[in-house]
Amino acid sequence: MAEIIFEHVTKMFQDAVALEDVSFQIDKGEFVFITGKSGAGKSTLLNLIIKQEEVTSGHIIVAGKKVETLKKNRVPYHRRRFGIMMQDIGMLEGMTVYENIYLSILATGHLDRNAKKYIMGVLGSVGIAGKANAYPRELSGGELARALLARALSVGPEILLADEPTANLDPDAAWDLMLLLQEINRKGMTVIVSTHARELVTIMKKRVLTLVAGALVADEKQAVYNQKAMDIFEERRVLEERAKKMEKKR
Image (cartoon, rainbow, N blue to C red; front, side, top):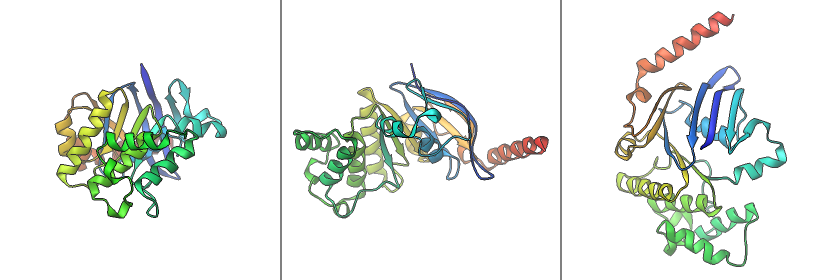
């Protein structure tokens, strides 16, 4: 069953194309990588899913509902479907790991008298229960990544979105995090990871959507990192085709 559907989605920022005519669907329980170099449109795609950005044209459907038609007061409920692990949503430095997660759950209105037990359980599930009272600055890169993952999972999401989760990690910590994401997926959660970590994508052998200059150029199952994602000639082809389309419209 399709959990997320993109139908001919285009996103423009003024005159700049972020995504162009992108179509795909992701089924419930899938593990999907979104690959491409910086500026390819990976983060924009994730932001559109959670309605952090608005589509310019096309449709995005999540759990049977068109995201672009959601009323403002329904957007917070839509976002509660997602555990969000993004670089620009860091931990608050003046709070402990436990307090950061407590605040995240508080924002969803799901806190109850068993909050402490629940939070410690989530931290335990990612292997850092012993760091509950540590501050973000006291954590290693790998521990901080696990804390961010714990916060994303603490809201009880149906879908996990991770934007470049291994960007600042050494190879061992990056691999450990990928194994955690794989285990989460095995338990039934849909996992979508944007990354340009070629080695990890190749080892994991999951479905890979490849973006080049905002265009979806490949959708492959059990794939290795698609070289098109880093191919300057492929990017040139996409940009030339886009320029020709713009010229015809004039």
